[in-house]
Length: 457
Image (cartoon, one colour):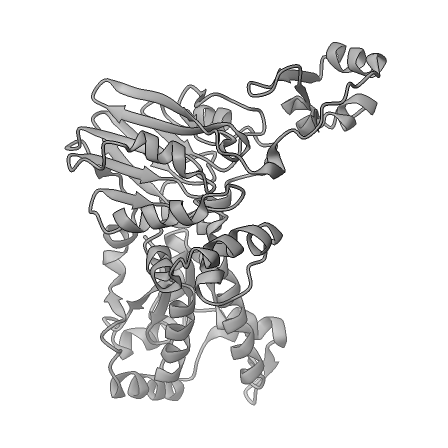
């Protein structure tokens, strides 16, 4: 499912806010009335009652649209709770939805007639109550126009069926291939797929297709050649934001992309138009069932599958929950029932193997630095991790000169510190990395050695 923008429509007193609260959706909603109360407190009217101040409507409208845009930028479920009696409001929402690739829905409360709305209106807090003449005016406005056909209309009783993420059954496939971060490394990908794409198997790519490697154009052109196949799925990684900007003639917010990847793509005449088409196909997650297993695939990795994945922002699916020091694999195994699994790429600070925890698989293999393309295959017999070595590495990551580090005292202190782990490097002889252990970060156990051991080679 893409980004989701839900706009409520209905009379004051129709029960819109009550519906959101009972569904636990109020925290995902933006209420113009609440914004009005932030801009100005309720004011006293002629009969002595207090009412919402409508004097600053232009400022309130501007703030509401800014808040909606901020949420859509992060790919959060966004609900707007108001009557929305004017068609101009909907045109503004359509523009934002198009800009951020969000699906726009109307949650329609028109089944609540005007008399019922009037009765329910007087039960609300004093400052929220609306004059009957105003309700009648809004009712007349709502009856004058029809929503554009591209805005899907749903009723409140359709909410659960429409917006509940449930795993799709993929058990009919012979096997499912999950590909880790590629980062512009074409040869290991081509080696793995040397026999081509098989119709009875599914291929899921977790994202980060470009940057750091030196075969970005070859990677993209190959992915373009298979992107329309029905059994190939591409997820969005964090590096795809640079690709999207480039495809739309915008500057990427990345020195790596601007200095290296962009130069290569333009030298090899990679089509911006085809790249835009490819980027439109990118998904945030795949949630599926295979035999007795439920599997969530994202780029970044999460700690727990929520009751409804719709409430998890696209930003967290792409960039992950927590940060690079979060052991997301152990957290997922701890927080989810035994039949659920996750597959992700993006981060591997602790250099875990593919099976990073009992039910979490990590497909970040340092491919661009001479590591591996990590692939996880699922078939009727279970999960099978596969690694393909990358031997085509940018000179920026090659060892130019070997120097001997002679501070044996510091090395001894690092090796003996119980809060530091030494990881001998698989790809280079006589080199180890020293990293603080997870509990150092969690409990703040910093000393002279743990401060130094942040990926110290």
